[in-house]
Image (cartoon, rainbow, N blue to C red):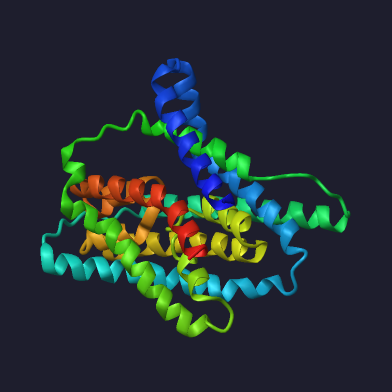
Length: 303
């Protein structure tokens, strides 16, 4: 029942933001649009702080790094090659775009900022642990505020029928199937450490690290929350590398590997590397995976 309650909260605040957005004044809208790109770093710092305090109660927390790297790499590549196989059958069309070194460096700067925010949270957590100071803090409410702001932003996103093309829907479907296939591979490698449903659930974050870390901590444990957080951070990095190395030749598979980040962090790279024609693919895929990620995580954890 707790997991159902968390999912309901997410969709309620998203819907509330969506319907409230058009009623807000222009100044408030501009303010929200201005702070939204930075809010994720604040949220990430709070997540890292909360997880560090919780991981202090776990033996050998450094053991979460290898599985996080493995799951991030296999799910990203699984999504890429599943989408590539699907479009080899249904549509071989490809649009080439230019590769901008400046855009790539900006993307790396965003990732560096994410790791900086993560590091700040970890340091704060370590300091509080060393000082034996207890602070009643729950980053879940910050996540709900973040989702509320996303709902407001979505209210001003214009959709048309081309976004509902069945070929566009192959991109997020391939991300789901590829992540699940990678999950079975990971289970054969990590089955002595995790159950199958846990490994499958860890592949459903799709790069949305600020959500997955909190949700796993709420639904399961701090250890799995830490793995989820690192997995999706690394998954975003792998997606950026694939976007710039393979996106010009295989645009939709690269978008599929980006998961939920294709509608925000990696969207500019989609336009530059894959071509403007593929922006609707990225927006629709990112939107669907962002909406489905918390639901899929909950379903797999309770399967």
